[in-house]
Image (cartoon, rainbow, N blue to C red; front, side):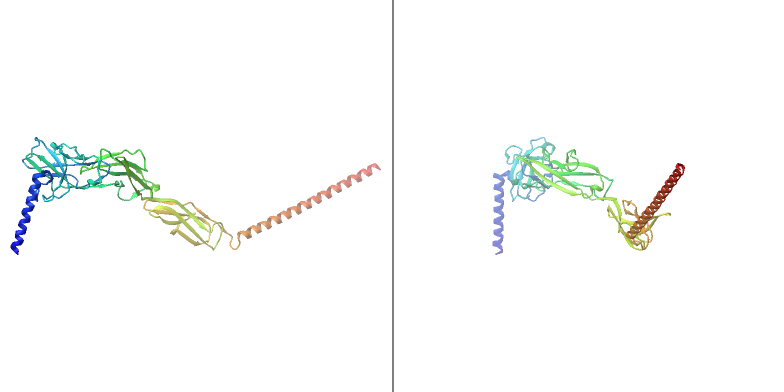
Length: 398
């Protein structure tokens, strides 16, 4: 039984070796040449790249080898293979050979192979391009595949949302900060157009990342104020693609700390209050972080601290001016002064008005009586004078 099993394993191994030999003969470019041994070729490229369908894709690539059979003065061909793994038993499909023999995806090696630059451009990415890719150098007699450095390409129909970058830490009013919006740029030859609801004159920049990929960004420096707290910054990235464009957006909300604003005080009940009654003073303010409140009463000796808290309730003994002060870590602000007016104890405003009315009425009656008496006296005096004149006239006539 054991002998039969060994014979079966030997037969399978022989068959597998035969298949690999045949593949090597008829399809030499479809096989990686590592087979579990250390590859003679290494490339430096991102392990994963995300592409946008309808756009181009640039793959940054640098290769290196220490094999003495490699000679840059000889003809060098770059080969890209798709699919498979690092092992010989899993063949890969050649999609490009810079010799011109194969170019399934219309690729173009834009880098200088003699300078070990294998940067490659996919001019029009399709969703079917998503796969694992391996690079190979053919420099007779040197031939080697970078089996340990596969490149994984994913393809999306919709672009990634741009990223809005805000300085870390607490943002405070009066602070000057630089805010940027950036978008991945798989195709630096046709970068995305960025727009946002900050100043529209922000200059677009496409920058190269340490791994060779590109990022497009715009930025603006602003001085923060309390009005920026809760402000929504939105940024849009429009990618040119074959037949039009594709757009992605993102939005973030600013959180800005600020000193107390719009501090005000109110009183209930309003108007005149009777001595001995209760009143309630309330303080309000807009602040972040929330403010604490302190109440003061003006006196001839200056302001006196009378209470702590948003509301101050007390029994009225005398009038005066009161104000509150709102305070947080960033500053403080005082309210306007509230004048507390008290009325005479036991006498209401209505009663005071009635008394005043009666006094005015009595005064009017007295004035009228005085005027009437004076008028009567004057009339009698005039009559008596007239009678005297008549008597004198009669005596003279006789």
